Image 1 (cartoon, one colour):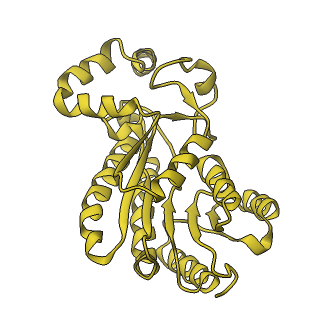
Image 2 (image 1 turned 90 degrees about the vertical axis):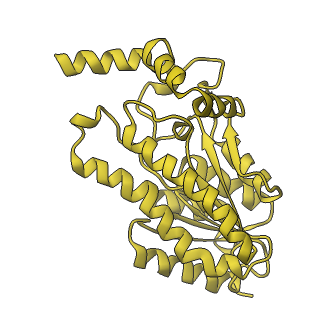
Amino acid sequence: MGQANGRQCIFITGAASGMGLETARLFHAKGWFVGGYDVNGVGLVALEKELGAENCIVRKLDVTDKSAYDHAVATFGEATGGQMDILFNNAGIGRGGLFEQMPFEDIMAVVNVNFIGVLNGIHAALPLLKATRNALCFTTSSSSATYGMPGIAVYSATKHAVKGLTEALSIEFRLIGVRAADVLPGLIDTPILPPGTVENAPKEGMFRAIPPVEVANVVWEAYGSDQLHWYVPPELAELDKMAGNAPELVRDQIAGSGPLAPLLKEMEAAAKG
């Protein structure tokens, strides 16, 4: 049976902080065996100490490195007897600014981590998912996948790609007995956010700051459901509907009086100055 000793198991990227860390804690509390992967070695050491070495396997992993991802999945499979109940492709980075001002290296870093890393993970983990009854391929998308967001255009594009990929795979994977779904978080209080973002966020509404444990709760709920898209907070589903039905209206609201209007004005002034 391996180190997991027959327990259900979850493979989490970006597990050293934020949503990944809270998910690791929650599933550990539910009695699951946890695989925690991140580029943050210090955070992984703390995670292993918190969960207990007998309850988890933690390894440094750059999700853009396919061979490293393959190896991580292989060692996880050795620990779980060839099983993977949930793949939580959660690792991501956020680098923003006006597109014309972004260094191309930053653009490609976002693409490589946020989308190529997801492809690497799904491709590597699929044999274990196929071998596990009721397995779930779960990926972190974003509220910026409801409508392309200025200031984070490339980040938003990668999250649209994740959403579209998940929709397609949710159909394809029915042929092999695997489910696929994603979470579209809004403003989550994690280290990925620029300083001051949470403090300046509205106290109410869909763009309020949400604690990362709320995303962890959604991962847990998703395992027992066939729902495709999970919105955190749930009101973001209405923005998704509006963006599909009236994209010009959403565009003008965002540009004019929406929650990003002050940021757009700042970026416009910076570009002119």
